[in-house]
Length: 132
Image (cartoon, rainbow, N blue to C red; front, side, top):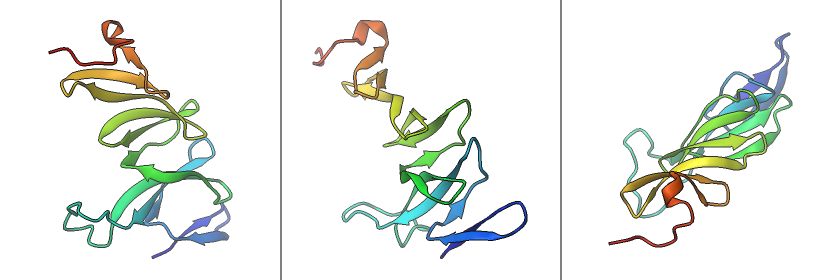
């Protein structure tokens, strides 16, 4: 399956191997691509051919952030909200993770930065081991 990108005059700029292309926001559009399912992972009934991953293209149709997210939102004020590995995150226009949710020790919700350092809650910052 291919979808196309058109300009405001209806001229086709190109066809792309994506499942969908969302409207442009701040020069970026969310795209959905079907990637082969990983061996051993269960697939949803409607995803027999693979797993949907989301990324971004620019106004010229160039992939600027490769499809790697479970879900992705439109850019606003230079950043976008994504879901990666089941956790909510915030990325910049280059796709760098600025912050994302995570679970420390399997039970403590935390926010980590792009370098995987805990930034919230403060009492968890700097911890590297779980306490019993």
